[in-house]
Amino acid sequence: MCRDGICFLDTTLWSLSCGFSTKQKDEIPNSTHVCQAPVSEAKRARGDVPEILPEPEAEPTSPVSDFENSYNYVLSRLADMDQAIHKLNVGHYTLDVKVSQLMDRLTRVDVEELEDTIREVYQHSKDNRKEMGRLEGCQKGHRMGYKCYLVFNGHKDYAGASRKCLERGGRMAMPRDRREQEALADYVKSFFHPGNWPVWLGVNDLRSEGLYLFDDGTRVSYFQWRRHFLSSQPDGGRRENCVAMSSDDGDWWDHYCDRNMNYLCEFDDREAL
Image (cartoon, rainbow, N blue to C red; front, side, top):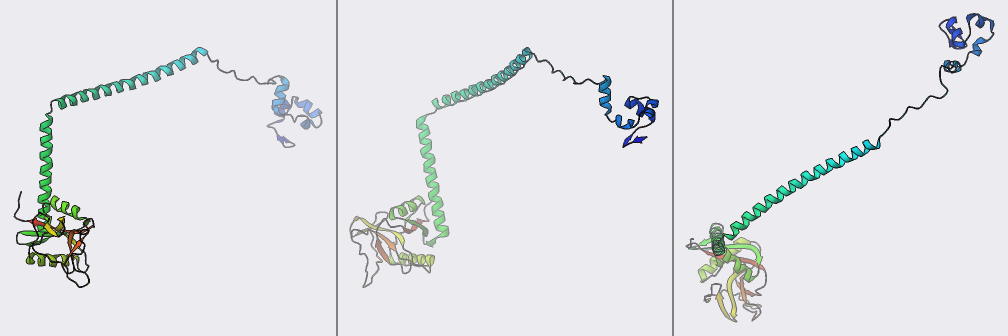
């Protein structure tokens, strides 16, 4: 049954919900409007529902339990720290043992014997580099009789070029006669063709002006100076004391010894370690 938008299962239920009997409901006009309060208000009027619901009581906390939790946390952290310190002590002890063993071995080493061994290894390394350089010069370079020549396309001053040739087991090129000079001129020209780049030879007058010596200290007896009515060589006097070969025609020029240019090394194929 429904009244003014409010539905009830039956008249009795409606009457009871409004607090009336069925007979009273029929006698009271507009009783539907009287019974508009919610069921909860009716229950509150009868005393079934208290006016203020009690708040749930919070669980009591004990200061003793908080102290115990903090105490247990501190103990756990201390235990972790103790374990870490123990690991550090073990590592320190192991390192100390290894250092002691190393010091014991060092005290038993013969220093002079060790120095001799180092010198021997160093000399063997130098000899090995020389042999490798000699083999490279004869495999990649130009061979003429028992001599091999190789151009190194790396700029060095005269002293640096001489040192590099010695480290490779050779010397700077020293053309001792016309045949060797012409063979070197053809090789250098073909190497740099079509350009014209000078290369150091093992010839200088550093010891005495006008006294030209090869890089091995022997005296030069054959010369291939450039001859030209505008600039004949040598023309540097005491300033230009080192000799280079021009790659286009093979002529010799005197230069400042600290000038950087390519260089030509000479190797003796008869040598063997």
